[in-house]
Length: 305
Length: 322
Image 1 (cartoon, rainbow over the protein chains, first blue to last red):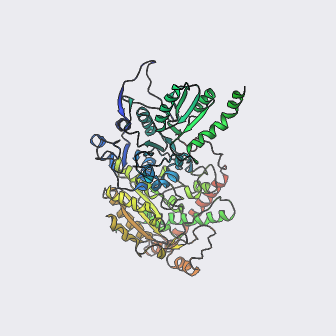
Image 2: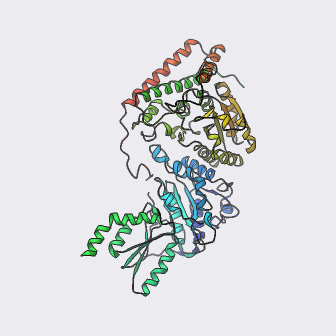
């Protein structure tokens, strides 16, 4: 992938504005749609209503009904149309209201979008973004609260992004739209109303780069999405007890920034993996497996010496 | 309908004959253990792909099915690269990674055969969205079978195409069996095209064994799509001569039934009859076309067998675009 962060002089801070996470996502969509006429957005209730969580609010007014399209409640039709549009030259961004509805669309995600490039011997590319949101905590009950990142992470051919902050949400969504692969962009329903400073104007963060959200020497907490918020709170509490925890926000689960994880663990020699999903066969197990495979011997040796 | 001119008529026959001979040769190669995986023969259904694709340009799109060789040839694919794909060669359309069920030829607008029944339907709909979005008069055609017609993807895609007036043809090839299940056990209606009314688009039922008929019906549907009037649902009644897959014991139908279709409703026999009766071609013309097709097929097989085996897969670049 050839996404580069915007170049700026050393030490120069970009202008920022405080934004909600939902607003930052909308900002990325707006800027990418202005930049590239082939970007269009479709999904359920995303036009006049602005999406179930307000991310696409205002886009209809600026871009009109050709580029901002409401769809019927037809998840596989929506995602499949995005695959076809992407295969033929557009860069569709589609929204599924809840990740729990992805089951209805999964064939188009898994057998079509993800596999076309490989299966067709490299003839095809599928530059599309599937935005949806997951997570619990809002009393939405079992069919509207799941964390299904492990489903997508298991499928070769997909990229998977799970931003925790407004600035990351903006920078990663812009990069996801410019990426030539199908990208699953998984937001968290309880992050939409969180605020943070967001760079104004073009802001690109490369996919596959984790972010150390807090430096520490005693323990590495590997986490993503909304759990980053709790991990930072926990790190504050630990600091009061004299324990300095490093909080590592993966931001992108596929591709995974292994080096940043391993470098942190080689420094702290302790790891705690925190995620919101069901533990059994969850993505956290993948992180633990990585640590055991690639850092454990060295860490054990160093601990022993 | 304006009468078919001689050149077009003979071309329709030539492409049908190419498909028939391709399938015959593919079965032979399979018998010689040269083909990995499985193959699904299109023999018997030639009139559908050929009659429809005759109206398509290289920049129009199709999506196809697991029984996709016919669509691929009708959309202009080179049989040598197709055989190479079946034989798992680097020179195949998908560098040997796809095989029979996944041949795509994006240079000719073929967005791929599909191993998932009904999987190509929403993809063609999305291609038609691109046509509309970019202001072009390109069209997309999705081929699927009576089996695919019972997938939810068809319902969602026909509705989406109708409300957005997308230039797409939904072409259902009713070959009478979804794998082993006869249509009478899978539909409560005898005429599948009745469904179109429920989506607000024209529905046409056509004899898929007579290429003149599919050609005529597709002409209207393609013209309608190109002029911005939206989608059409076409149901072509047809029949597959081989089993669902090579080696299918076919316990669900009788030999008599197969022989009856072959004898009375073979698309190539029907074509030869009207071509000669209407004096569009002589027996000598047809014999010449047959010889040319045979030569093209043998040249294709030779090209395929000379190709290097598929190279080892590279990760991640064979899976992810850089």
